[in-house]
Length: 289
Ligand code: DGL
Image 1 (cartoon, rainbow, N blue to C red):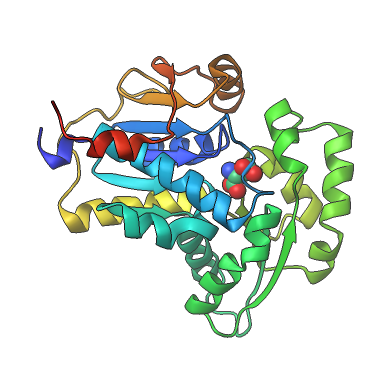
Image 2 (image 1 turned 90 degrees about the horizontal axis):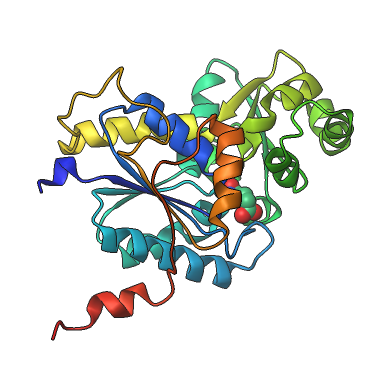
């Protein structure tokens, strides 16, 4: 199989990364995807650096063992904490969601002398300052305010996208953000695009919301072209989210994953398998008998 026809690997701590899968699938209909949701060990957003790094490396090694041409780390927390370690261990191009999300925010606020950029994310992503650093690398005059919104994750998974409780939680989390009144607000967690409407109404219609998954899909497209790695297949118009060209793996609770996938994407994965990712590298390195 030529490199070009290999799938793109995507991993997330669970189901949230499906928003990134959707963005990639929409932008790159000729590509095939292998998605791994680490549903046995979710959430990552409250875990330590060492633990997130270990999980992220195991997930990456599992996907690499399946044969992929590029790895997308859809999980913001894993991108924030583990990207250097993943790159060190995996001999592949690796794209995280933080850099693209941060760069997009700066791009969309260009022209402002001192752009104000808000970031909402998990506690671990906020504590890592990864978005702050990505934004400041792209614009050293940007003013950044970050806020952890951990309850948005279960609310999105429950499908509470317009309940009054969701609006009141958003109002509480985003009080200081509203006062800061950013020019752009980065949705720095896989789940937050599901609550886009609530977030937009809470911070105000004039705030530009940045979906890091969409920004990542744009950069992945550029990278594939630059490296000559695009798939020559012509599927445009024939592809559907979760069709049988894409393969989904979870580390636990496949049925729940399928159920939430249907809620997020309007379709259940055609190919879904429960697997274990622990020790994949040791298995891979064992000589064949
Ligand atoms: N996927 C995670 C992220 O984007 C959210 C869920 C979790 O905490 O694992 O940060």
